[in-house]
Structures are given as C-alpha cells and as structure tokens.
Image 1 (spheres, rainbow, N blue to C red):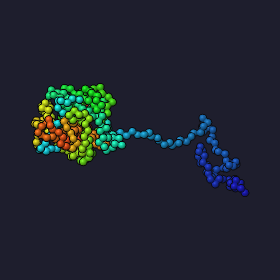
Image 2: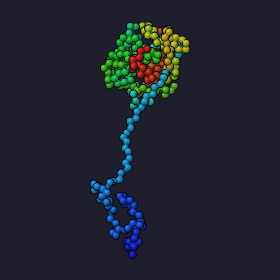
Image 3: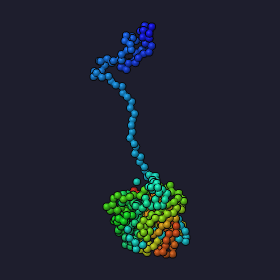
Length: 347
C-alpha cells in the first residue's frame, strides 16, 4: 500500500493546511480526492472585483540624512599688570591710514603651524582708520560675516566721524559704526556694499589653556597683516578702562597710551571717573600700537580673543614697543555682546 492510499483510507490528513482566505482546515476536514490537492481558490463572491485582497506587508521606514546643526556657545573675559610698565592702547598715531564648538580651518598639511594659521585667517583681518575731532588713529578688526560685519575695540572707533577699512587683499571700504559697548571695549562696524568676504571662525575661549600656542594678526603701526606668535601666559586678568569718550579722545590727541588701571594704579594717564573692568587673556605674542581690535587665534585657526591692550615702557609712548605682555578680550565675551551691538547699542 503506497502513501497516497494510506492517507485516503485514513480519511484525513496528518497535517492541516492553511487557507489564507477561509481560515485553517483542521485534520477532521474531508479530503480532496485529487492528490496532490490543487491550490485553494477563494470563493468568487468574496471578491467582487475578481481579485483577492492582498495582505498588507510591513514596510520599514527609510530616513534621509539628518542635517546636524551646531550652536555656538556664548560666555565671558581677562588682563594683568606691573609697576614698572604702563598699559598702552594698541591704536596707532595719526600718521597712519585703512557661524559651534571649535572648527579646524587650517589645511591638514599645515596643521599646528603658524604659517598655516596665517594663511587661513589673514583674509579675515582688516586695518581700520578712524578719523575724529581728536585726530586719526589706526587699529585692526575681524570680519565675522561675509557681507562685512567687523568686530573691533571701542577705543579704535570711539567718537569717529569717518571710518575707512582696508582688507587683506587691498580693497578699501567705507564703514559705519553699528554699535559700541564701552563697558567691554567692543564695537561692531559694517562695510558699505561688501559681499563675498571671508568670515573668521569664532572659537571657544572657555577652552583656552595657559601655555597653549597662539597667533596674533593685526596692523601694528599701519603694517597691514602682521603676524606674530606666542603662548597664552595667563587667564582672567582684570583690567579697568575709561568709558568716557572725552578721556579717550584726549589720549588720542596726545598720540599716547590708552589709559588703564591695574592693582589700584593708573597707567598711561588718568582713567577718569567713569570706568569699567573686564577680564582678558594674557599673551606674550608681540602686540604694538595698531594691533588693537585684531585677532588672537588658536592653532586650529579659530578666533579666541580680540587684542585690546599691551604693557609698554612708561617713559615714552612714541618709542614704546611690545615687551611680551599683551591682552585680549575673550571671544565668548564678544559672542555674548553681539546681539546688543547689532541692535545699535551705544555706550
């Protein structure tokens, strides 16, 4: 007796078959006389369109690439002193005319080199020539937007009736003062009819460490694009400066130092009755008159500070030079102040 006959005699299958349209047939169901049985067909009446309803298939969800947005952190700033030296403003005399976290803007082949930093960031540093009733002065600035927003020191443009800017490639622009903050010695200016400029990446000054290597770029004595290097010497140095515009203009008229106070002593003249104290990064990178408003940069090419002051010999402001004691306003202080400056604050 073969397998087919055995199954037919038993009158039932040993295994039930599942019909997707009529449910499961159990072992007690009658056996189709044909072997093997033909595929089960759904009743015609169950599907008016003549097509069986297909069971839904579970499909996975596909997602496209997600854009990652980086927010730039915002925070606060430092400076120091000594009795044998005076702090001088870095604005030159009237004989001179003008986006996270950290990014890596230096080419990998030049990573960690001063030349690599200079090549990457120099196009974002400008020379500023400001003219006021007190005379003219030269400083530096840092481009922060491609259409010509520039951060500089308040004492570079304070009281200016006209501001001219020269970019690294020699292009000259007229600029307007958008906003000032004398309490932090910061100012925002905007170039007229500018586009396609290279904006400098703003770093994180909270991550700066004593001893790390830095680069300074500015226009000391009108020497546009001058690059110097050094290290971070100290952090959180308190510096007291004058917020009185008349006091600032008197110092400019004398072609002399920017009045600062440290440790209860005044340097480079009377700071006056209206003062403010901010914190700065101390560096031994060479800074001279004209570096004010320029950039202090880490070795990845990120701006970590705005150079603002230097100690110099108190004997003669005309012959004063860098003695390796420079100070920069931390970039997180700048970022925290941007909204106020862009709103046109004056003070």
